[in-house]
Length: 340
Ligand SMILES: [Zn+2]
Image (cartoon, rainbow, N blue to C red; front, side, top):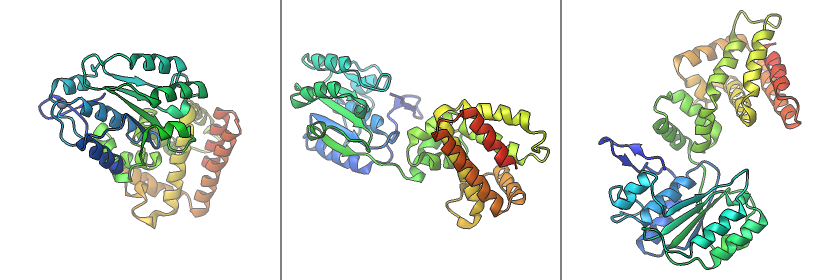
């Protein structure tokens, strides 16, 4: 797990943000010593399910815990913080699904006592990706897990899950975080990120810090600036733009599935310009000086009708992508429409 550095330079567990309901339920079970043998953390992608599972695994093996918090100093905690805890295993989807062989091997291993900890913790991520055979194999283990084992399953909130799996676990709901919470996590994880960028990524990720971090890794904001600069460049006209448009379109196309996120960012940009008086919701207009200058420039450049036409162009590009049209071509056509 990733520990952040505290002032003494020693690794410590990162602070958990949000998920008050899951925190309350878990803390109550821990304090009254009535932990279930299996939990299902159910909720959107990227909102902290894995972090909570890691924390719970550390907590149940900690020599000196307080509430939900492991001490961070005992032998077990130190092993967790250095990702060196042999009794914490993680099973994640491989090529999009949880392999039945992994479930079978895990079930067999539960018959043996943990190597050195009080409780062996098995985290099985994204069980909504499991096929029926793997799910049935897991069901058998969930019916009668041997003592000294804790199973934590995670799943996407929206999908259908086998009722029988849900009924054998204590289900804890996880929710999207608020915008300020998402911004706070981004600024902690990426101290170099400016307030405006953090705000934009948080809005785009809709309360999923994990998704916001993935968007950041895809260099989405940089590409967005590049597109906007291309559109704002006074020297750019439909006649001389093609070389630069082709280059930018290729970079956009290389985003793969995240191209839709770039479209969403462009849509936010045009929408914010259409409604500069909305106040709190308009990050672009309140942003740092260079972007505000760009926003002011754009407003000189385009009236509301132009902005509306550009919003529609982004919508059309999105529809073409959904129809499996050639990605680079869709980007080129979009850029030409935005330049018009
Ligand atoms: Zn400890």
